[in-house]
Structure formats: C-alpha cells, structure tokens
Length: 441
Image (cartoon, rainbow, N blue to C red):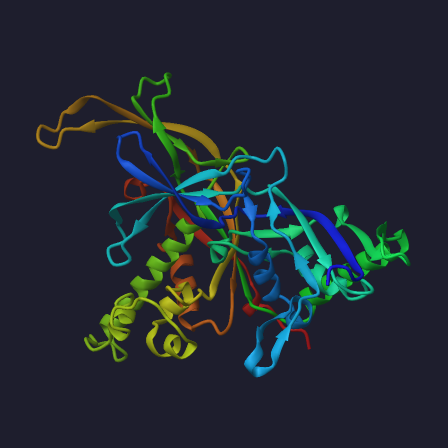
C-alpha cells in the first residue's frame, strides 16, 4: 500500500497548555523526610525523550472530525463486512531536541465530604510544560491534497489530549508556518521519487485550512462560555517547596509556585474549590428539602453514586449517569463520566506585590514560642487571575445558583495555602457569560 502515491507531511506541534500523557511507569523515590513516594512518569521514547503517541493524536483528532471514518479509517469487523483503511497515517511525536525537562507537580487528594487533605495521599505527576514542541510526521494516502485541509484545520486550531483536559491541561496545536509536504510516487521505472509540493498548491492549502478553521469556530453557538476574574483580597501563596533561605534566619521558608515570573495556581485548586462549594450548596438544599423542611430521603452528594451502583464508583452509560448522578457529579465528573464543566484557561493577570510573612510556632501547652521553629512564607499581595470555563451539553440550573453564591458579597472562594489563616481569599467577578449575551436575530 505504501508503494502508491502519497504525501509526506511534517511540521511541529506546540503545547499551549501543560500536558501529561502517562504510561505504566512509576518512579519511586524518597522525599526530604525519607518517606517512600511514587511519581507518575510521562510516556517516553527509547532514547528517553518525552513522546506523544500517535494513537492519542488520532483519537483526539477523530473526536473533532465530521468525516472521521473517511479520513482516519474504521476498525475491521470481517463478520459484518465492515472496515476501512485510513487515509492519514500518523507517527509518534517525539519532543524536539533541546526540550525542557518535565516538571514535577505535587498534588494531594481531598476528602470530598470534609474538604480536608487525605492522609498519605500526596503524589507527584510529571508535566510537560507549556511551550514545549514535538516533531509531527504523517503520510496522506491519496492522489491529491485537496481534502487534506479538513484534517489539518482542527490540528491548527488546537486539540486536547492527555490527563486533565477538563482542567485546562493538554492543549496543543500544529504550527502551520512550519508545514512542509513532499509528494512521493513511483516513476515509469518503478523507482520511488519525492518532490516538494509547489508553492501555489501549498498557498491554496493554507488558505483552505484558515477558511475551515474560521468556519468551524463560528458555525454554531457551541458550549456556554464563562469568564471570571479572581481578585485576592490579601496574601496568596501556592507552595512550590519549603526550605531555609539563608536571609531571614527562618529555618522553614515556603517558596511560591511561579510561572514566567508570576504567581501560579494549579487548575485542580480552582476546580476543587468550585466542586466543594457546589457540594455544600447541594447539601443545603437537601437538608432544607423542597418545602423548606429537612428531606432525609434524598441522598447526599458523593454518596449517591456509591449507593446506587453498589460501590462500583464508575459510570458505564449515559442512562446510568442521568439516573444515578447528582448535578454536582454530572457537572464536575466521576470515574467513567467526563465533567460538563471544562476549565480551558487560567492565568495570572496581575502578580500584585511580593511580601514575606514571618511567624513562630507556639507550644500548645505553655503558649510560649518554640525554639528553632521560626518559619516564613514568600507570598504575593493581592494578585489577580482570570479563568475561562466551557460548559458542554445542557448545564444544570444549579450552575447559576453556584455562580450567584460565589460572586455575592461575603461569597468568594478560598484558594491556595493557609486559607484558614487568611491567605487566598478571592473575590469573584463574572466578566463574560455567553448565556447572558443578546443573541443575533
């Protein structure tokens, strides 16, 4: 099959958001307290370079294409007479030479009932950083490249893959400026030859890609889009590490998590805070009941699924989701059910000012300061963030109640480290909500 006419496509994939595509490998290590830990590693090639599997690229692209079977093929079912070969053959995408080393993000599991960190549930995950590039290579099996734009347009727009796409991770796009195509075919003697596609044909292909990308982005209303501003009303810190700084004399100094010289917030932090608030609202409604009285027969969020599905803790069909999931679980997801609320962008818009807060640990029995227990936090004063959400499908009406609760006076969200000590109290403002905008007639 590969002896027929084909086109060799090469370009570069660029990460627009941090990405984690894991394999089966776990890295064991010992932390600063000599406790045994595990780190979830990213998938790598034989030479150790990070790798995006072709199967992941193909699966993410298939979800975006209207004519996926025609371009990407269909699995063979000989008994039913089905099966179709793909016209686009993609290769694994290895990281470009001189790539940045993966970053290790620390996470801790949160008990959804109490909102507190679960003991012994600290874990690390390798993340490929935003801006990292990968070599893209594919073969287009056809006599012409007339329809190739239909396949490349979604890649140029950006596709999401890997873990945590609903939390803003895993967006990557094809660099159309670095696109090159070779025409490969056999001459009269049967010898294979390759010629670069002429400039006029390439220019037409690029125009077609841009037209299709613009048409796709404006063809339908799409999911509901909500943009919110998060303004901290005091100090904020998300901790990167703790150790002495040799300046203040503090033996334990909490260093902030930073990206590009600005304070950074884990997307999971924001999603977790929203889910916790939503679960609290659901419990308030459950406790009051429809008529204002307590309704003891309504299951509490996060226990309903385990009760209904016999502890399986996963959903296997849409019917099960509609029947057994609470609105919180449908909105934020559970195992086997993708969340309807996607955080597609979270970034710092104003870093505020840096500050160091020094404290001393107190003996709970005597009330006196403890010797050698001076510690400090390198925090940021009144930073601002902006978050963009997409709500897929039919959003539950309770979503509006959740938004109203966090933007009201006295509402807000508590994010980051030491929220019980006054850190990370954020005022929330809805900047844009597509559901509230006037519709064109």
